[in-house]
Length: 114
Length: 111
Image: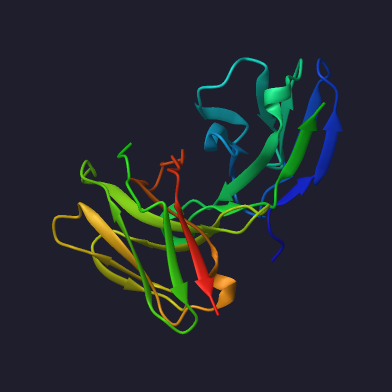
């Protein structure tokens, strides 16, 4: 079956702009989580959506937001980009029984802010 | 969520067995232990998950002692392609929806 698909794979934006990243989970997975990975901070949890509702949120400023659609696809948005937002943004989806299969991650979107 | 401690890096040679130990002294009763593998510029990949004793799948084994305060990921006969970062995570399943990653263990397999 198809894995988690993230688009675009690479993105270059200018400071102050906004960006929207997309994630299509594995078919049947209703939970979608977003993570930011940087060399300095490692992998950090951004937020998680289940059935179009945000269930959990990490410690990130309000410039980072997300949403989930009825087909479980998710988008995350970063407004007023800063140089420090340059990172690999990863999306993960999970089945109902996480203990059976864990989370499946996409290959990520590499965002560079210049 | 329980904090985990792993070695920062390890070195091994092709064909050897590699054991990576993770400490999680504050693990809760309903926490599971999960290991992920990550290659550069890719998302982490689920390796194995367990609650107690021993779990084995086609790629690894997970050993969990009775007190569950630590766990050991065992990779049999590693190859160069096993060079990656390995993360140990603990948390509750079935509603547990926030993964807390530590720094992970950077495994380098040499020819």
